[in-house]
Image (tube, rainbow, N blue to C red; front, side, top):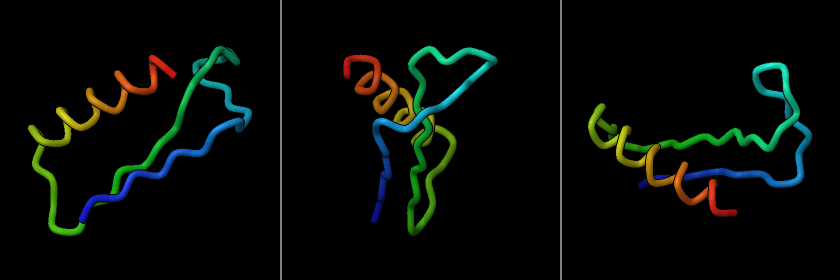
Length: 51
């Protein structure tokens, strides 16, 4: 089981700027290894960059 939570239209400052940014949490029951985590993070980032 994997859950991803994203909330839109929330004011956020990252690195001292208010440019578009996102914060998300990925939760897994069972465990994700480092390789899977990197792949999922890259895939989620690619989706967010297009939205």
